[in-house]
Image (cartoon, rainbow, N blue to C red; front, top):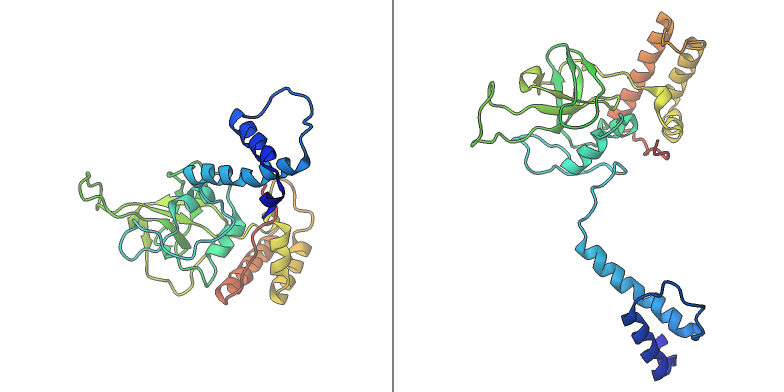
Length: 260
């Protein structure tokens, strides 16, 4: 379409310039503006070819996978490895954890059958977790047994799991059960560390808003050392509980706007 307006010499000059490469120190060009526009239109073709040859980058946690990844043990639905690496690669991401615990999330849940301190051994996140009896966890990884490898313990692979507070942890298969207890327990939602847009979305629920108002009242004056009154601790527990109820009843949360 645009090419019809160009004269043959102009096209010839443009092709010769493209083959010669970009100049690093010449004076300003005196060529008409039309060939420059043609160069701009031609550039995406080269860029597209370069992108096609380059490997796709690992996705960041700006979206929750909706299908099960391959390679996990039978009966396990867990997210792709690239997603888990992004989720557990640095600091805990409680906003993503809230979405992972939602009613619509397809991923397998397991429950602790004991109290134990856990660490994430599959990546760089180094936050310790005091896992508690009957705590619900989302499975991030539970790989198939390598039949050709050495068998350790009962031969089952460990579980990498996610807590409600965004902390990733690794536990042995003997420490969890798939049988849901009558009243599962959960890690405390770190309300003050949630991104503001996530807080605002949760506060649109009247029950959560009332619980947060009580928490703010009872926890006013809490010291930087984390010393809280029994009433403040109870208010924190109550706020976490109503957030869990919100998620289990189908409530959803947005992703954080800040990258922190």
